[in-house]
Amino acid sequence: MSTTWHVLGAGSLGTLWAARLARARLPVRLILRDHARLASYQTGKGLTLVEHGVAHTYPVVGETSDSPGPIHRLLVACKAYDAQEAVAQLEHRLAPHAELILLQNGLGSQDAVAAQLPQARCIFASSTEGAFRESDWRVVFAGHGYTWLGDASHPTPPLWLDDLQAAGIPHAWSTDILTRLWRKLALNCAINPLTVLYQCRNGELQAHQCEVATLCAELAELLECCGQPAAAQDLQSEVERVIQATAANYSSMYQDVANARRTEISYLLGYACQAAARHQLTLPHLQQLQVRLVQQLSARGLPSD
Ligand code: NAD
Ligand code: KPL
Image (cartoon, rainbow, N blue to C red; front, side, top):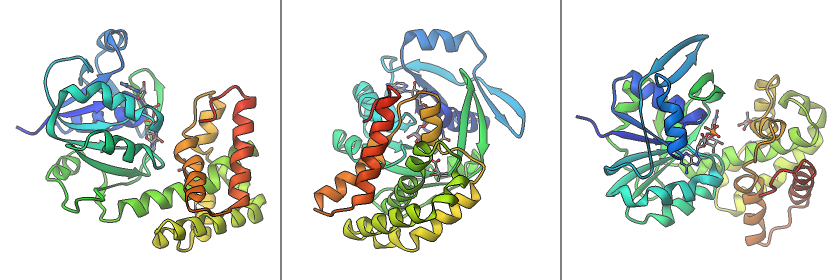
């Protein structure tokens, strides 16, 4: 019998993963915020995944953090700013050598969770898959992509990658997961804040090529300084390629702001600016970008952390 996958967070990515694991008949349990959410979930038939316009519902068992039973494998699928608290609520249930898979975007939350649980194995993930919640318990698989998983302190891949294979979750084990996360962070810093400030789709940043290039140069300097030279390589051309390839899309940060949701700024641009400060690196355009973004968020009544 395979180890049960506990999935923390019934949002977009949590549902996408839980539904595919359940589809492969792997044991999955979904951890919901509280008893009210659990009661609401239990009035339905399970989690619905819409893929290529076709909906399928999977009867995944729901629970809360105070349900009984140990957790051996936990997929943490909440936002970066919720990760520490969400994991703390489950600490009493974690088996001594539990494994956690951290799906959070950006950097900072993964190290915080790993420091909180020195006994556990924390595997970091970086995903290019895209999903959004159409309604409660119903998620649309919007963009097929790939998930890289890795453990910066332990290069051996876990055996459960076979479960991901069985579930049709495209993935690869990465021995340089931090480089991947830094690279993604740099891409997100060069694109997402500008889409919020100019209120535009990714493609419209082609009209701000100089600003994007200046930010890429500063981000590359930061990556070099942080010991991530591979993540700095050809950054500008990749940012331009992503802007072109996703021209019609609104960035995730744009969507968060448009829907009056808290952003993950502290784990993206905020993390980059803090790292620059730690290295006494002056990156005027990046720092100015953070000031402008914080002003914009505050003006909209959104948290700026
Ligand atoms: P989401 O907001 O859709 O889902 C997060 C869920 O976690 C919510 O349902 C929330 O209620 C739940 N949650 C928070 N705290 C909890 C707690 N203590 N107990 C139980 N549930 C709790 O977020 P998402 O879009 O799935 O994103 C999750 C992470 O994945 C983010 O860091 C995001 O940047 C990253 N990511 C998302 C996508 C995507 O397409 N959605 C793609 C790549 C990366
Ligand atoms: O990851 C993205 C996002 O919107 O968060 C892209 C498409 C790369 C834009 O930064």
